[in-house]
Image (cartoon, rainbow, N blue to C red; front, side, top):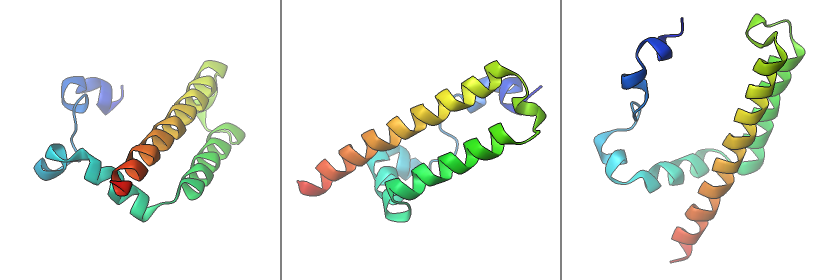
Amino acid sequence: MSIYKQNESFYNQPIRLTEEQKKDPIQVIDDFFDAFELASSREQIADWLQCALASDNVQFAEPLQRDRIILFAEKIEELMEAALIINSRKKRK
């Protein structure tokens, strides 16, 4: 069983963010886009999908598992796009 499932209450909350980042989560978005452009992030997701879906990795052996990783990747991309818009609007103010 996954460590994330064994400790769901712990992993269902921010664990990487510092107290300062929790108070100002927009700064995390700023930091992300300072480190990675949207295009390179999309490329990274595509590489992950290629690795997960085109290899003999048993974690993605079943069609439902492959479908879930595709959905997850699409949702991460939407999240990045939304964050980019929020970040761009913030910088214009």
